[in-house]
Length: 113
Length: 118
Image (cartoon, rainbow over all chains, first blue to last red; front, side, top):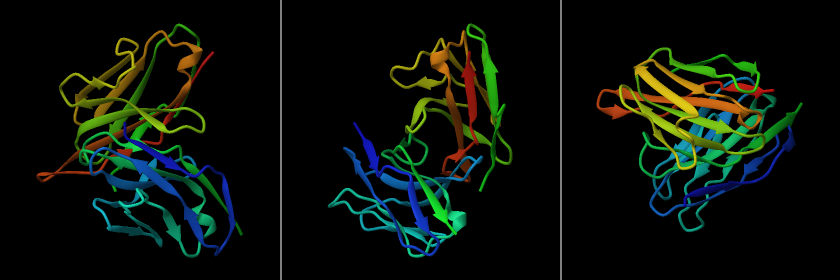
């Protein structure tokens, strides 16, 4: 079945460092891909998404490009801030927005001042 | 984005009792609500999908008689864990999606409920 694999955490970086969180997926169809973020004590929030190959999702300085050839959707940010400390989930949905979402295990990110 | 709340945020109960968790969409009408379960350091696992006014659709391996889901209105869904046991201890998260015109919105997630069964 469909699945998402993302790098294990925690990831600890200094402020202004470059961030990459790897994510690869397995899907039978043509999924939409998502990154969700969960700040401490809050619910999951959609960070960015891409619905087809070569699409780039971006938000709050974060970017991810839908790479069909490598089945990847890596999350990047050029200069992280302390406020980016959170848990990041890569996810896919294979049948549209109102259908089930399959999540990766999450990657906890700590940014040191 | 839209806001989804859950109540309670934490609950501790004795083995054998039942626990009800509420999920509310505060500023939109949720035609579909989803219930997830998350174990420590694990993915969110979808338990069931419920559409307002109809029976929930459970994922394979989820006991429908143990995890009762009711979605009686467009702003409220409840998950009742019946005869809870320690292995039911987990983090339960709901999400909701609705209609904006003719388009379906993204899923908006609640903050989760931590259930501990003693």
